[in-house]
Amino acid sequence: MRELGIETICANSPQAKGRVERVNKTLQKRLVRELRLRGISDIESANAYLPEYIEDHNGRFAKEARDSFDKHRGYLPLKETLDLIFAFQEERTLSKNLEISYGNLLYQIQGAGEGRRLQHKKVMVCEDLNGHIILLQAGHKLEYKTLNKLQQATKVVTLKQLDEALDKRGGNKNIPSAHHPWRQYKRTTGVVFNR
Image (cartoon, rainbow, N blue to C red; front, side, top):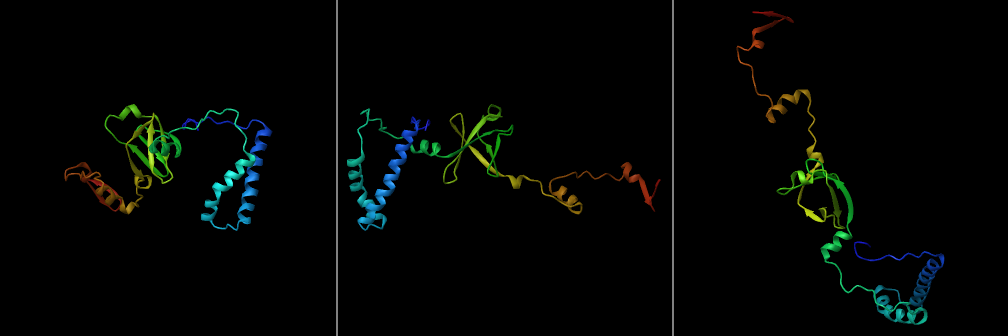
């Protein structure tokens, strides 16, 4: 409500709360009975009847407001602003790699010059009802790329597959030469003799 610029007025007394409850009960009972009396059982007919019902209801129960000043807003914020306000919002802290975790995904901030300035800063993750994610830092949108956490995990290999896995990753390919000290030993029946 604060982001929309709307002041909330609470019913601070049991009497005020009771008035609200009585109006709701009146609407729930009367409207259903009026629809039955007129034989209305589908939405289109009910919507067509509502203006007549509202005029009749207000004629019976409406009371003049204490303050006649119209406080309705003449404009609405932009659609993009409303989408951000009505989104699910969670605050996260960026890592030193400019990453946050949200919904089993890693979000890594992209863009030139962001670097150290954003490390360990608070970021607001906004997810709209369609699942679209927007990252905000101090009200500014951040560009990002997503990384799957499962893809980041290291593949588990058995000892038999270890040499092959290291070769694929560019592991240690330094093969000792023929004159290396390791090659100077000869193995025979478990006992090592120097040549």
